[in-house]
Image 1: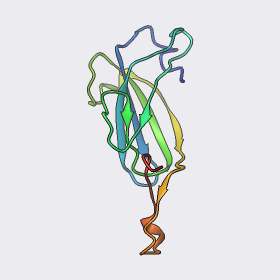
Image 2: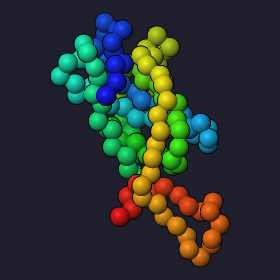
Image 3: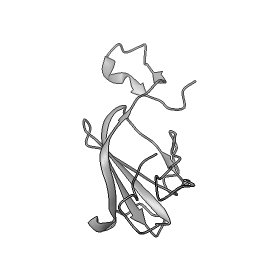
Length: 120
């Protein structure tokens, strides 16, 4: 839940969420639609984190846990291209916390610990 369109008079069809890892310099993107019933007050986006993401369907796949800078852009099309800067509605910081991890017990090197969103 964010206030991305609070200062905008435009109701976009889609919203592009761009997450840039502060540690790995990796960028992750997905498009979503606003599911809010009070769009003049807030925007509600449903994003599902999965290892095999449909990035134009509200799904996203983070490779690493940690801190990310995010940007939200308003869009008329359901694609992952970043529009001009006038469509930038909000930016901030987010933390991805992982609770499911995989660990290679053969190699005790901690660099092999990774986030697996589909692990049971």
